[in-house]
Image (cartoon, rainbow, N blue to C red):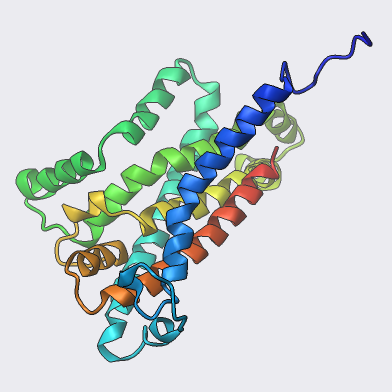
Length: 270
């Protein structure tokens, strides 16, 4: 025996094959419905489940007359997503910088992350009761922003923590010894190191808000977000359903690109 150790751990050919097989099955289950919907969006009769004959009619019809009813929900959804991304990233930046240096940080982090395991409908109902029952404020844009913020903040915090936990605070002490104030030290030293986490936080927070439905159902008031519009159009089995296939395919493609950019940005810090 040469005495060399397997850097990947104790993996035999059998276990490696099983891992690859299970990983392939998982990817198949994850992406088959998504790829299938994309193919059906090019079919002349998407509801038939057969992507043939091929056509781009549904894509070209998205902006024609009544078919463009999705534009206003899209603008509302983008606006809410940008607000949520800004608020979540700002809050996560403050919390993520303090969390690694405080006592009992494990319990504090658990308190923030516990929201991830709470049912979205429960959060939506809680905010609905809070706004209308206790405060008497009508639900609408800002109640939607609130529930999306609650949903996005833990993910934004994780993005910031990935880079902040490795930050050497002695660099800030050295900067202050050289005469830099707190803002100058943050701008010149801390911000460049945290930038990948901040960028990833913005991307992920926006996407989480953009695609959020369960929490929105109970807090939307009179506004219509794009996920809600797609959900109601699909459930109603109206003439818009075929267009929803094309619209959903576009949203999935854009979301995939944003997730890819966010992941690559975050991994650059490692």
